[in-house]
Image 1 (cartoon, helix red, strand yellow):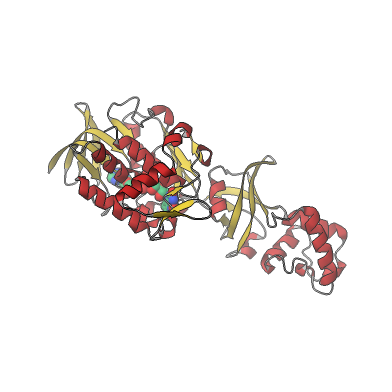
Image 2 (tube, protein in one colour):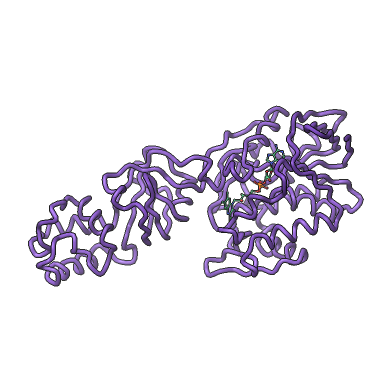
Length: 401
Ligand SMILES: Cc1cc2nc3c(=O)[nH]c(=O)nc-3n(C[C@H](O)[C@H](O)[C@H](O)COP(=O)(O)OP(=O)(O)OC[C@H]3O[C@@H](n4cnc5c(N)ncnc54)[C@H](O)[C@@H]3O)c2cc1C
């Protein structure tokens, strides 16, 4: 079949669906189509926030993002309240948790997708699923897309295909590839918000363990980024939200240093360990952190501090050994080898460079071509920042169509 539309939106994810709704709300007469390669729209959206969808954050600010796009001005208007007003008008009730992360009150990502899907239906957005794009070309000031079954012409085109992150949920580089073919400059995708692979003699013994602490990303001895939270010790890698946030900045050669007792100073810990030396005098030295750290973690800290002879008793530990244990618990180091791959990444850095786009995300080079969501070179931290950008950029583009 051959179709003619005012606007074609490739990608029925967070940004594409919001873009279609905004376009129809802005101009109900517009003929808008969403072309989605999956059998249904919003597959990734359903997996977000552990199935609960952390759709925005009450503290949206540009310093929670990296990439070539400067969002400072954008977020002055398009903050969380703006987005939540839109979602409320679509029927979604939300709440913010103690860390200001916003979720639907239903605690189900499907509620977010449902209000978007039903709005598309209500406003008359045409959705084509299971469409594999074979070719995408400029034609007569517009764009022609051919899929295995159909042919679409649109006066305007929106690339809302996301990034390469999470390929099982539809992630791929096709959006960036289309844009590259249309002459736009692209920053290659790199995995982000993912576990960080590290090498360490003690990591194997910690596998499966979770601990609270402060993680610092060190480069040439200086902290690039610090985060407090739960660290997960995995197979050859560190994981957890705080580690994911470091992954936005980490590269091979950096060091992740974990402070396992961030609420205590070195002096306080020293005094506690001196007391423990007496309390647990007859126990083996790996019991020095009894009542403070999980056993396996305590053993790793002692080992890293040089006390690997656990036949010593706590009472036999020298002052020097206790001081080294203090240093280690305040900064146990894991050298970074690389980031985990796209399969484990929630997002990707890279995409179309900001210099290619106007403030309303239209291409400066190719008239009537727009980009929104993760296809743009911007990536936020965990906490609702990426969906926020996907939704608001989709909205801004929709209003231009
Ligand atoms: C497991 C997981 C959990 C996450 N949790 C959160 C969270 O809680 N909060 C948060 O803010 N962010 C979260 N994110 C990130 C967030 O999901 C993305 O940043 C956001 O979905 C990006 O929106 P988008 O519209 O750009 O891309 P997507 O939502 O990925 O949508 C792109 C759509 O385009 C389709 N597509 C791709 N290529 C083509 C093509 N060639 N033709 C047609 N269609 C195509 C895809 O199938 C997809 O449906 C999470 C990501 C993952 C993987």
